[in-house]
Length: 216
Image 1: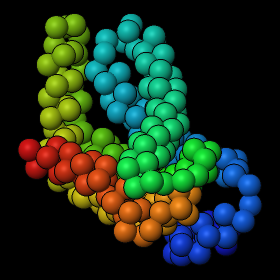
Image 2: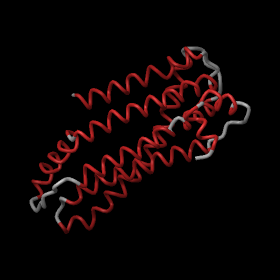
Image 3: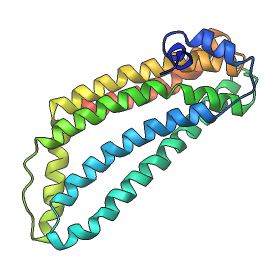
């Protein structure tokens, strides 16, 4: 991690203030999002591999396409999430009379995915620990596949490690939110208060959703 990216994590205000002196650039933010998406794709592949392992032997030969689809889908979703988050923040900032190009909003939002990339590594490690400890029965009856899959899903969801991973994930979301506040402040020429509200509204909704999922 170079000094610039370290500054995003520990001093985002100064980092974005300095970035405003240069033209918008998406190369580094796109790389950050790509790393985040790749790590998420690995976790998705692990989950799909569990489902594949319960399929009959003759079906497993074709199930590799399932892993490929999961990986490609997760990679695409990573970049779509980046664009959607930037779009939502850009629109909300209009309520506070924000000024600035969407390209700058997209750039600064991409930098805020850096904590998510770090958090994804931890989440993938938790997922591997949980999955590696599962006892997966062999299934020969196609009608049993749905039942076993549902049971495995419930087991993984109820695992304390998965719940811990969820709460750890919230901490990284808050870290990203802190970065986004300064990013939106400079990208959209907002006061710190208005930038905090711009970021805080969607983040609060997202965290509420995570908590409901974990505790519900």
